[in-house]
Image (cartoon, rainbow, N blue to C red; front, side):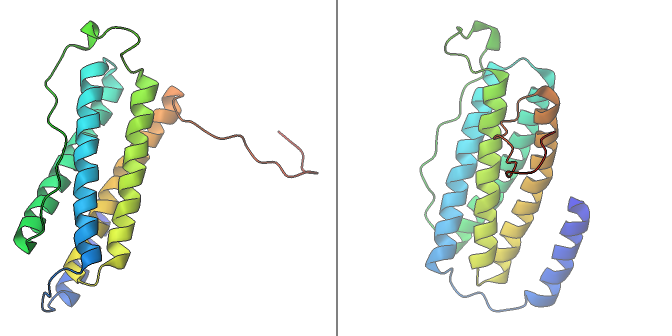
Length: 182
């Protein structure tokens, strides 16, 4: 599905992005700055997860998140530098460690790792939506729309894994008075 969306976005971009490029407005610059910060924090969180879990499916999901977050981070960092926007301070890279040497009580469970990752993906998805709709410049809007499409595709696969493994946190179901419960 991402390929179709990417294709549509690429076609639309060629049709409407021949506009002159004014400087970023403050909202665009702030959203870029905030999103880069969020991506770098996602990367740090994923590194912690990679150092903590031995679950093959969760490791695969973490590697997928790392790949997307790193690629998007590089794109937006380069964009910000070209536009003259200062880069945010970010967390340092985490060194690799052996998950089997982390003491219990300190070690995150696979459930905790998956839910923390899910929260970061949802927050990043929402920031992309904000960036896409508040952008005046088409190139900025399209950049955030493509980031959002990648996060949506990834989030769907993460949700499938979390449901399969029983890690999804679901609030109680709402059943209005008078309706039968199942």
